[in-house]
Image 1 (cartoon, rainbow, N blue to C red):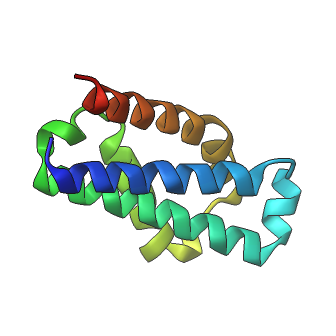
Image 2: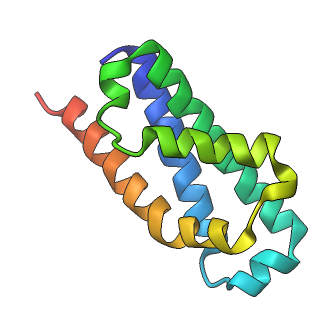
Length: 116
């Protein structure tokens, strides 16, 4: 795996950690009513989606290890370009269900790179 790929994977892990932490002990209603919380979480979705997009362009084999890469990048694009189409309930579902699973996938990929 390329050195830049490891850096981008770590960026994804950090973005996931931020999203999980920011949403901890929060509700969908909190998310919908707190513009600062939404902006912070959306920014970290943008970071993880862009990092994965860079991996896909520069190290396709590594990107293939994240089966949902295309969907994650598409989600990032909606957040950036389709700001008026954002469904807060859907984002909240992604936060609760998909982000922890992605974090675990990234940890496994990084751990595999660290093993001899």
